[in-house]
Image 1: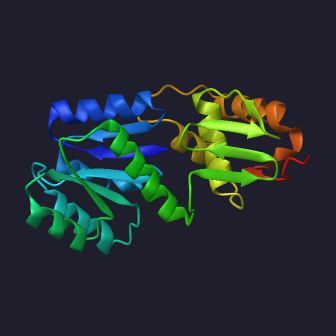
Image 2: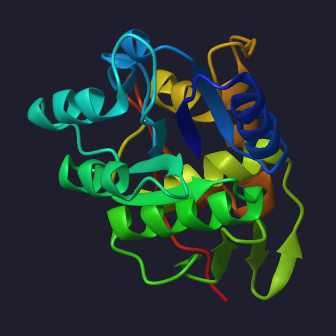
Image 3: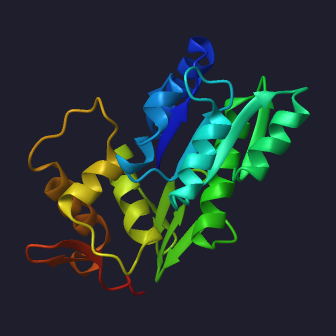
Length: 222
């Protein structure tokens, strides 16, 4: 899951960025509201974490701008515990949830998954595709009840495909979902991870569309 964080407090921003990265998220972090105006257009973010007290352009103005442009990415706002007017203003401006400072990284993760489920119309953190199950809470994939070992990129690619089973993803789409701004990407990276998933779950799991990209194809069978 790729996350955009807008937080000008360096301590909080670093804790969020490093903590979420360690838990398997791809994080892009900005400290200035002006830089956030068009940031949601630069990558397929699944959730935006937004501090309201940003320099130059505050969080409420950003929210109003994004929603007026039709950007529907779920937004989790960060506020001080006693800032009730800010929380109300943020929700009224189009935020989907809020979290009071200070917070535990585990609660941030739980709220990110809740917002993602709501956006995708899912009731829990498990995705079933035939005999393949992906648990997004503990980041474990099973095939016919047996755990299949995945590294971070393999898990994220499988999560992406399972979450959008009818969509054809180009190589650029996949790279933008699996990597943040500072990551180095080899030219054949996507093809390598597609090949690995086919070896682990069956060649028919992922279909290649010539000059277009990749899409889930056949469900693994018993």
